[in-house]
Image 1 (cartoon, rainbow, N blue to C red):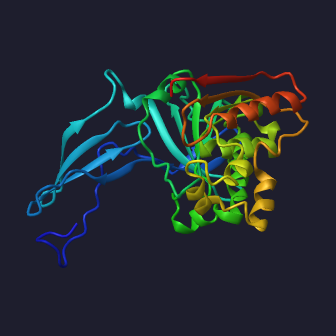
Image 2 (cartoon, rainbow, N blue to C red; image 1 turned 180 degrees about the vertical axis):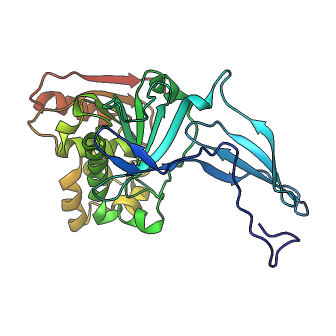
Image 3 (tube, rainbow, N blue to C red; image 1 turned 90 degrees about the vertical axis):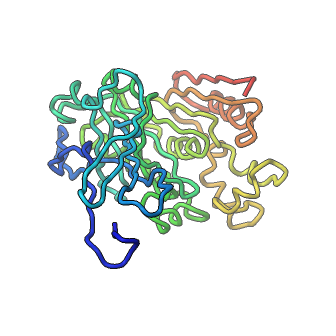
Length: 330
């Protein structure tokens, strides 16, 4: 931050009150790994140009959104706005980030500290692993009250920041596009293997969740390594890549060519056919699945999850349930 409208001046390091002291390590049943605390900071509404006060917004997986007024001359913080559920106590929770042993994939971990007084040393624990990895979208730390019911039951919430997303810059995104899309799935598998190998979770209690393009990530991953997961939750998943991307009359198809390529081109067609989840379902054991669809969804056609569920039920060799829920009003 430079005072007096620019020019040379002192550099300000903002240390927010919520930033928890961290040893820099996380201890699991089998190892000790480097870890970082997690938060997101952005500029809030700064409508006055000539002022000594800078408004900044702070949030994390465990801290609801807070707006601060930072007085530059005195370097003092003042809380001016706070959101979040009533009676919520953020001190009960922790959020840290580790890196997978293979492929160096960042993994965010969120858990309830008082239920795990030894940190993650008392594992393995029930774990829900999710990811997205598309369009350069960043899964930055942000508060979501919907996961509190899981954390309060002792579940570890994990986010794999796979290639295709923008968390580590432009190159990280490019490594998950076009003819490199399969890097996303290898990253997700590497994250799951890390959770198991470190003793944070185990295959019998590890579930995966994916929404839309995140559904592509999860379903392609379980085709490759169905043994890693006990169950999957697929919310309007994009699973019929080859057929959908071959039809330009479907909304958003042409725009999606800029992300994963146009299968009407020979090289892209054969590459996409290697990972398209629907086309790669085969006779093997699969984890239990809950799949949702929306009849009026213009982004992922309702027929994709329906086709996927129908074929999965037909070809799988286990007795695990495959449930389908269709919303006829959305």
